[in-house]
Image (cartoon, rainbow, N blue to C red; front, side, top):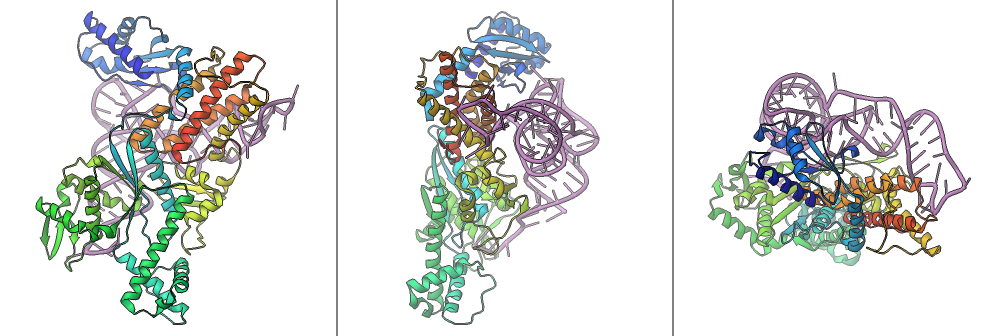
Length: 552
RNA sequence: GCGCGAUUAGCUCAGCUGGAUAGAGCGCUGCCCUCCGGAGGCAGAGGUCGCAGGUUCGAAUCCUGCAUCGCGCGCCA
């Protein structure tokens, strides 16, 4: 619709140049926006104001000339110059009826875009260390990562979801030591629990399981015992994590092991490439990466003077390999407390010769859990944090995912558990899902009354004359834009806002007008409209990983 | 100290990348159930967009400075 209008304006502009009403010959980008105020029409363009300088003419004068050149046009019902020089366009109702046909024809394909076609993107998210259960913060990262992936898919990208498993390095050894200590306690020993050990109650669970499955384990000598405990712990914890994520509706295409990088000598190989490019150097017995060449405030150590690699080294190798795997764009979802690491990773990407935008890092801010407005912090399992599982079990998957996506991911989020469970309009999830269920309910009623559901292209929509009906159709027409903007910015919350807007307008309409009325033509047209709403609600909810229930 | 991010209604937050009279939800006030699901709806009050400059036809949005808050600044992971 917008494109049609843009073309029309473009040719009007050309006509003005041709007949010399305008002289500059400068063709600016034609911007078309949807005005906030409906009195300003369906679309507005600031073209005349943007051209004022080059033309050395008053914007309104330019606008008048453009409007004159536009002539009459079958899909425009009104064109006027307004305000400082805006051109406002009002489309005929038939244009909006077409949108309903499009939705009905495309069904779950409505809203998909093409601009990502042919591009491979990887979204890496959660990637929590396999040393304990997922907590609520990981949950937000999971919901955001999965939604971003879904939105990018909807925009045409070829998307892979990946989990990076930090199964090498110190924290795994710490897990092993922690389990071993608890294991020895089970055998009646009194032990000094390490200061940096993991305190959570789940360590005792792991020890007890190991004790049962492998009673001999407690008798192993120190290095083997810790190694055995660590391996056992990692594999069990990864199972928990996978189960929790599955219960949350998230499936990864790939689980990528950090250890596998070392096993395949990839860290050495990739670091050698950097050295060859002159991006690293030795100093004080350590190997450094020149990240300052690309905007970092300090060079970073890759290999410590004792010969062991830093965590950064494997991260560098990992990201180098991501690009080797052919991704055009790589997205990392991190906790916001890691924001200081963004410049150095971007530096790596830049050093490899990619534009820094090829790596996008989404920072996820903290979640403040509340219960009836009061801070809620007690975790049953871990002692000091709330697990994702606890929250999903309490409020349900849908509410949990929806809440995690309600705010921009880089701003903090208040999550009230009681509100999330409430079955009323205070609760945005229910409010939106209920709108969908309501349309389904109308359909059921229609079926009971033997009213047929309207068919695509064959429905006479001239019964849709109310301003609120056209407004709803216009909102439906804007859904593909909402998806595109959400994809361009990796911002799932835009979909949430869209949904709330659509649900609100639908509820308002429903409350004022009956769909199933005496007049068959009106009934058919209204059924067509509300089913368009149903389809878009379902499509949008699907992007967020939230169900669109037929009954509640 | 340096860097990053924030600052919009009483509270929690949007604001389509510079447009017209700055929006939503919650809370507050007052209404609406002979109605396809009231698990809903309508109306109202509420603002110096942190402060001060600048850029231009036009700024919550871009630039500079300041204030307040948060976070990050290991040969840790």
